[in-house]
Image 1: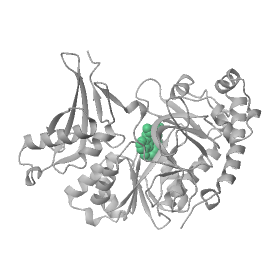
Image 2 (image 1 turned 180 degrees about the vertical axis):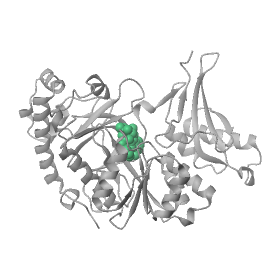
Image 3 (image 1 turned 45 degrees about the horizontal axis):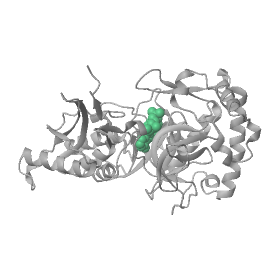
Image 4 (image 1 turned 90 degrees about the horizontal axis):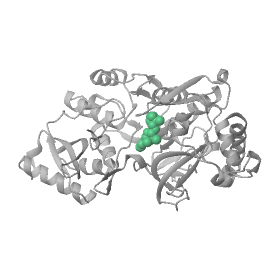
Amino acid sequence: MRYWQPKYETMKREELAQLQSKRLKKTAASVYENVAFYRDKFRQLGIGPDDIRSVEYISKLPMTRKTDLRDNYPFGLFAVPKKDVIRIHASSGTSGKPTVVGYTKNDIENWSDLMARNLTMVGLDNDDVFQNAVNYGLFTGGLGFHYGVERIGAMTVPSGTGNTCRQLEMMMDFGVTAMHCTPSYALYLAETAREMDIVDKLSLRVGCFGAEPWSSNTRKQLENALDIKAYDSYGLSELMGPGVAFECEEQDGLHIWSDHFFVEVLDENGEQVAEGEKGELVLTSLSKEALPIIRYRTGDITRLLESECSCGRTTPRISRLLGRADDMLIVRGINVFPSQIENVIVRIPEVTEHFQVILDRNAKMLDEITVKVELEENAFTGELKDLAAVRRHVQNELKSVLNIRTNVELAEKGTIPRTEGKSKKVIDRRNAL
Ligand code: DLL
């Protein structure tokens, strides 16, 4: 087994708890001293950093939400002077101000190390050629991966996004063995590679995909289409960017680097759920200098897996992300996650894996949900002989999972927009005038 930092990756639980306690105390002291927002919160709760004897005390500390970063835009939560910040990133923010995050030199060092751990964990080294097909701007995915790839000494191809045919040409010409992009863009790349009939000219063996939810069926699809092993990469700007949690070659949950992040999975009342139960991922940074974050409510739903992984790493793991608390659609009182729809669609051979969910309100003010899917070129060669049969089949499959009747719209292949970054799968027109 190859590790990047074996000392930390295979730490015994007691040893890890000691390290976490030490780092939590330091983090709490830093935010108390340097960030008015946290000092006020700690004071309101009648606690100070000296009360923290061990990491278990964390459940008494205040939570941080995305709105707190927005309210303190741009640098209000930074715990170091501006001269010590060597880089910022920002998350796009679909509404209101974006959230800005900052890094000291040490933060960038740690981030690069964590990314190097991840890439080593999926079997990459300096013999690999790595194409990083994501945006290199304020989005953390570009530079975050780039520094990790350089750290393991692989040859970096910083292709960025766009021009899908050119991306594929680079893969062929440079002998690219590993790549990173969003899973939705990977599907598009795979589709284009098939159309150009070049899949067998690619040397790809590893794909790292993340930054948005994707299902295990999409994984299978990508692995088959590109003849690779596809790994899930989870992260968020507020905590660092990509690299917070990553799958190993076992593909059995994502290792979360708990020497740098303390993991909680909480129910609606803020109580820790039992191992294996669904809850919201709440993360505390244990080593960040520029922007330490205490108990950040990620909004992402997952399960905590504490059992040891056969890869030998002793970190806790989380299940693949099951959606976001705020991604959940409520349609006629029923909870619907876009990931459930994705899981159904990718199993139906008559339609492609691209879909959109459109929500409307009808004349009786009732919600209507329409799932738009694309018909495959050879859709009628199997048991389903015409459009009506395909539509009915998709509708029935969706009903059996969602417990709600959906309208199904069949579109021509290629008509649902493909994206280079995070895809927009839901169009909610219910409150439109
Ligand atoms: O998306 C960081 C990243 C870049 C992760 C590249 C992985 C690869 P943000 O733009 O701040 O940061 O968005 C973070 O994206 O809270 C999740 O809701 C979602 N997300 C990220 N990774 C996954 C994943 C980057 N593997 C938000 N599965 C997070 C599901 C994911 N959702």
